[in-house]
Length: 140
Image (cartoon, rainbow, N blue to C red; front, side, top):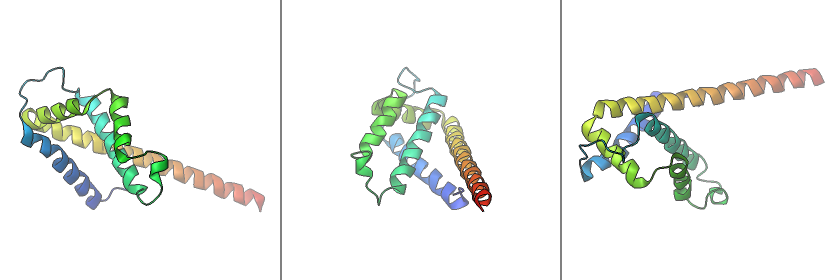
């Protein structure tokens, strides 16, 4: 399923709304040890958006068998990246308040990574369909 303009706008809207909340809470002028490096933060955002898509996609199935709650899925992502919610919040606050251009670039990088992942999945699906068709032709 390719990302159309509506989906891209929705993606940006979700990003802006989600991360703008951090802006309302405080300003963090110094980039300290509690700020995630840009590339790590981009990777974190990609994983969060994949999790969001996963939970939306399987909302009407029995996802509780896989993850008892959406929260545990997100906790897994925090553990994978070795960060806490406080560190992510500090990172958001820092980039939104002090480097908004870099933050916008990081959002675009995350979106581009998601687009590449989607293309890879679609390519794999097409490859499997072609292989299946060839196998069916051989059987005939």
